Amino acid sequence: MAAASVYGACRCNGFSRSLEEVVTCARVEYSRVKHAYNVLNTELGLPARPPTPGAFIPTMASRLEVSTEIQQRAYDLATLAEENGLSIGRRPQAFAMACVYTAAREHGMWPTQRDVASLANISPNTLRKHWKALERLT
View 1 (cartoon, rainbow, N blue to C red):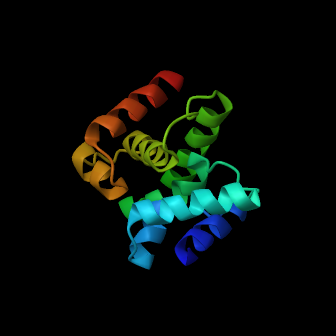
View 2 (view 1 turned 30 degrees about the vertical axis):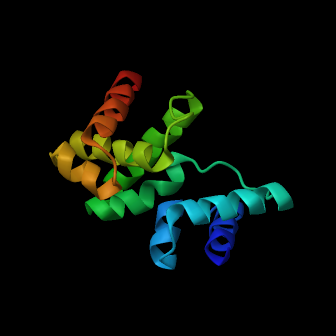
């Protein structure tokens, strides 16, 4: 319940922390924390907004160790995608990493999709799907 409360506080205050990150720090099973958060949210009616990919850009950019220029371009891509509804229904951390990957490629960095995907804990196929969608948008 404590881990679920931390996650709920992060969500309500706009901090970009995934449930996986909270679970890892708490060392509790994912399903238990998710269930506890759902109970808290239902009972208390938490004013949590859905996280956006833009909120995860700094974390993902840090994992890939890119420059602030690339990070800013990734944030611009995330904002553009949000405005066009491209990121709706997609996992924000995965979409954020696709934005960082796209920006890195635009600036001459050529990391492998497998390496980038592993940093975001997603499959290379998911990264590729989001990256292609971003390419069509820009």
